[in-house]
Length: 468
Image (cartoon, rainbow, N blue to C red; front, side):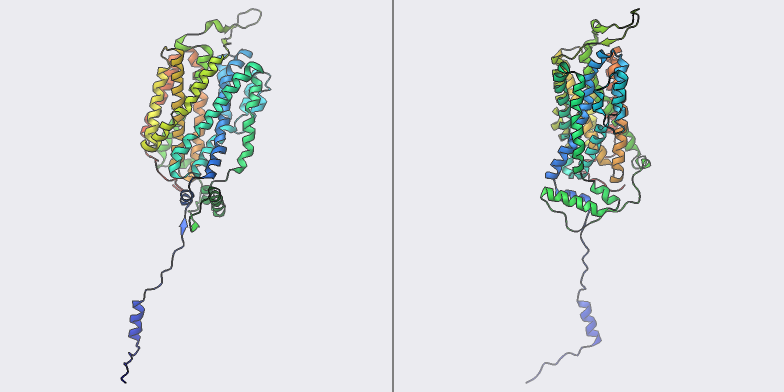
């Protein structure tokens, strides 16, 4: 039987064999970023809990701000204060928001105007907590939910405003304004204890090289949401330096930063101006340029020569109802605001609402009925609240992680400057010239609308950046 000849194995045949066989490919390990993890985990129970806790800072801040509006008429009469003195109380409160001690409860024991001003100076955790709360919520929210969930934070501000007005209508006529302040301090004290449940930003931990802490935070979120982490290893560039003030003025962000600062100043000026102006209009009956001259209280010594323009017109139940109705306006435009932010974009939406705010400031000067005044105040509160929603979202999205907290912090500080000026326009200039005060508010809003429309960066649908 013939056998098949075997082919001799040569060096050449082995070389051919090696060339024909593909070398095994080394698989690269899978990696993911914090942004990937946030998007993969999605929205769930963690975000609802975070929304409730951090949103409650808005309740505390709103109560502190509205507290001044409802207490001002009482202390004006009790201590016979002039217009600038009442405005100084509000300004001192807003200055105090730049630091953080919580002395609201002690204000109720103030024996005089000087002590009242000093103790209000020591109040302040509300605003900083609210601003930081918005930053934290922005960090943990998936991209597609930021434009919907952050405007809903206005519900908490609305709740705080309505709560203090409702309490004032019951407490002030019965047991006095001091007990109102004591009751209003309780939510802030409770909120401090809830902060321990808030995790550190995963993006911040990664940017400082603490990847293990970032992974632990993300795993905790995934567990609460009953979701899964992305496969692989968490990787992000470790930043050699953190954000500095000079980075905000870098060529890439200079124009954006300057225009954002203008907008923050104007929005806060208009927002607090609306709150205080509505209280002044109701307290002094300054509608259509009239003054309640009959309500001027003349004070003085034995000579009777010194006079103090103290308007002792306490809020009536109808005034509290007007304040409640106008305050509800802060959430009235939320559906339209959400649609505008997500479909028109942040810039165009903000420029439209700022322009409408300027218009309604001018309409407030029109001689109208009580219902008309309520309607104008309602729309103004709705518009200024929408402005704040949009600028918060835009500022948090436009800066990278290393600059985000710094950008929000400086913007919040500038916001206080605008707010500190507002009392002297709403509570002093308005007494001399309603038209002058309203035109000033309107002009500032027009400048902000133009600045918003010309912002160089649109952040709609944009993922949060880690580095510059």
